[in-house]
Amino acid sequence: MSKFIAITGSSYEKISPYIEALKRVKNNFELLTFFPEQKVEENVSIQGLLLTGGGDVEEGTHYEEGCGEVEGVIKARDELEFSLLRIAYSRNLPILGICRGHQMINVFLGGKLFKDLPCRGYQVHNGGVMHEVTLNTDSYFGKKYDLETFIVNSYHHQGVSRLAPGLFPWAHSTDYVLEAFESRNAQIIGVQWHPERIMEETLSQMIFEDFLKKVSGVGNS
Image 1 (cartoon, rainbow, N blue to C red):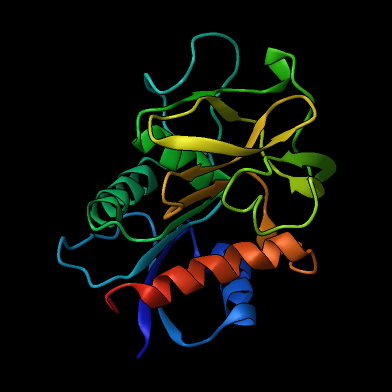
Image 2: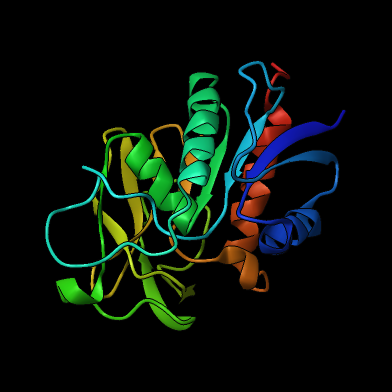
């Protein structure tokens, strides 16, 4: 029986690489695409939520005070994704956040962000730069993956400054930017890099495989 996954983005063109990554792993699911300005019904039938990359979250108290400017804000998208997060979180559904999605989950659950990493003294994490990340071997994926370090791509200028209650770090860069987090039961996974662009890397495939496995299990018990 097919499962329904809600996937968000600014346009179909922008979310197509994520769709291809999902289909590369498994194809027995249906996607419900959500774009800015769409309305979300409270009774929407979904078994998982994927938040994709994009512009920054709108200004607010979820940002640390200090330097930096927000870029590419789409307020309607923020509102859409917060609505879907409320639904998915209240139902304990699998949630996967990538790049912007990683940051959105943290904000939704009460965490904070840096507006701009370079102005805070961190390395440049934008423009597709590849860099090493260290994995917490006691974490959910740390127990599944054989290596303690791996290489990721970076397309972000913001980052998590304060992790939300109930989330736990499982990967960080050499300059200690938080690269991934998980909830206690690992129903919620956030990654700051773009695994859909490096699917030849084992951990990238594992992230999508794990998400789809959890989606498949929703409602089966």
